[in-house]
Length: 444
Image 1 (cartoon, one colour):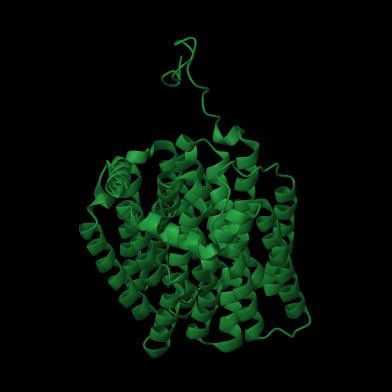
Image 2 (cartoon, rainbow, N blue to C red):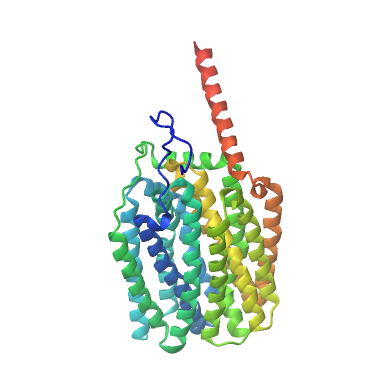
C-alpha cells in the first residue's frame, strides 16, 4: 500500500515515495536519544544532590535557588550558540560538552571525598554544566530534527521528552538514596560514569551535517535574520512567550521543592528524591500518551493546556501539609510538564525551515535562559517569607499570565495552528515578491 501520492514526473504512478524510516530503526536518532537519556538522568540527579548539599553547607533556601540560577543563566546565550552551531559540526560541539561535564563531576567528587567542598565550588560547577546545557537545543535537539523524517519530528521529540521524563524518575531517587547512604560524592561519581558512556556513544555516531546553503552572512547578520524570521511567525512568538512565562514563574518551584519536603513535609532524603521522581513518572506517562496519540493538529493545544495543568499542580503543592497529597499532586503536574516540554521543541522544529532550525532552537534556549530571574525571585521570597508562600506567589502569577497569553495569542488554541502559520508565511513571502517586482518596474 502506498504511503502517499506519487512524486511528480515518476514513470509509474503506482509507486509512491519511500515510506519514512521508523525513528527507533534510525541508528543516528537512537544514539542521540541514548545520549539524551544519560545526560538527562545525570542532570536531575545532579540538581538534587547540589540542592541538598547547598542546604547542608549554608542552610539558605536563597543559595539553593542561586545554584539553579547559575545553572540556567548560560541559556541566555542560546541564540548565539545556535549561530555558532550553524558554522561548526554539531557532533564535535556535543562531544566537547560531554568532556567538560565529565571533568566537572570528577572535580566535585574529589572535593567532597577530601572534605574540601565549599559552596562556591558548587556554584562554579553549576554554571559550567549549565553552559553545556545551553547547547542542548541548538546542538543535540536540532540534530534530531536533521536525522529523522520531517513527519516523524513530533514523535521523535515526544519520545525524547518521554525519556527525559523517565530519567527524572530515576535521577532524583538515585540521587537522594546516594546522598543518604554514600554521600554526595556518590552522585558525582555516577556523573563521571554516565557522561563517559554518553561520550562513547557520541563518538560512534556517523553524523553528516545536512546539505544547506553555505553560511555567507556574518554572525550579527545571522542573528538579525533569525530574529526577523521568528517575528514573522505568530506561532513561534506564542511558543516563546509561554516558554518565558513558564520559566519565570513555573519551573523555579523546582529549586524549593526539596526545601519544602525537608522543612515542611519533614521527610528524609530518600523521600525527597521520591517526590521529584514521581513528577518524572507523571511526565513519562504523559509523554507516552503524546507519542501514541498526538498529531500536529494537537500540538499547540497540548502545549498550552499542559502548561496550565502544571501551574495548577504547583499551586496545590504549595498549600499541601501532607507528603502523600503532595506526592499525588506532583505526579499530575508531571503530565503538564511533559506536554510543555515535548510540544515546545516539536512545534519549533516542525515550523522552522532546515536553514533556520538551529537559530530557532537557540531562541528557545535563550528564553529559557531568562528563567533564572525567577529563581532569584523565588529564592528571595523563600528567605523573606517562606518557601511555600514563595511557590504560591510565583505560581499564581504564572497561571494568570499564561492564561492571558492563551487569550491574546489565539493561534495557540487552534487545531489549524501549523496550517495558519504556513499560510501566514506564504502570504508574507508573496507580499515581499510583489514589493520587489514593483520596485524593479518603477526603477525601469
